[in-house]
Image 1 (cartoon, rainbow, N blue to C red):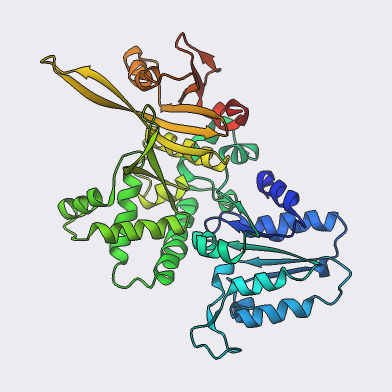
Image 2: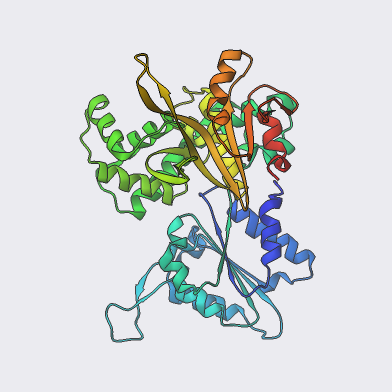
Length: 431
């Protein structure tokens, strides 16, 4: 059992605050365990009777009938038998609740959804509501408007390296290699062999994520394209791309003709399922965002590696992806940096060039520029890695994260160097 302290502390802090707590994240990342076990145990330790904790797991057959919002509302209200004691309502995978025609009004367009159920429960003074969901549509502007700004999101991610490292039972020196190979899906802790872990991750992708996307968006005859697109994105983590470029790749390398609009829509589906996340570019000197191209990162390295049959375990790109995920998990705003500068070509003609900063990270009034590098042992390679950082004219912190184990140190340019494990285990570095 993982403690998931980051998320449990958020739930405890938001307890009884008059708002619905919306726990989001990809399926099987630990939302149900967080709510139904860890948070439930906390409430019991605080003296709450188990009969006052109403739980429904809507992705199970046992509670399938309550995917009807009217039946769901009826079931919960029948459990609330005392107006003087506090009730805690846990609804797992709320997106399974169907949208049905409202039978109580004449308007055929009127619908009843899970929003109506939750808003109704929130009117009961002695009820505190918690829901989990595995797609980002739950947090669309329309949904939040219907909640009337009465919802708090707790976003749950696969295990961070720090969580993984804390319970790693083998020699700690192998923790990083296992983490960047198999990722942070909690159930993997129950498995021991490569074959078991690989099968679990591949089955999870096929039977859960892809099936969810196909069923949710009613996709027909395009499962092969979805598979191919996921593989292309998995192969190109850390590379700039856009739907038009991907469409050209499909046409030239796979002889598949698919429009950029369709690819853009399918990528949106993957983002909606929390499988991938888009990082947009930021012009550091111009202080503006650049819409395209962008980078796409997988939310879990094990799932990404399973897509590619564990054949492309290039540590450089994997490191970059893991750093990105960890920065997002910490609640930071993260962009891909671009630094433009003037120089001359071989003929002496003035030209404008661009250098990349892997991540521009903002935390309130602070900013951090972070570069991911496998190694800086070679002086020429080191200069390549820090070239963009040296051209940034402000005084914000500049950090190079390397694969090697080393104590943090700072060079004459004010650039800090730190090993990947130390960076992931010590959040105070970006304090």
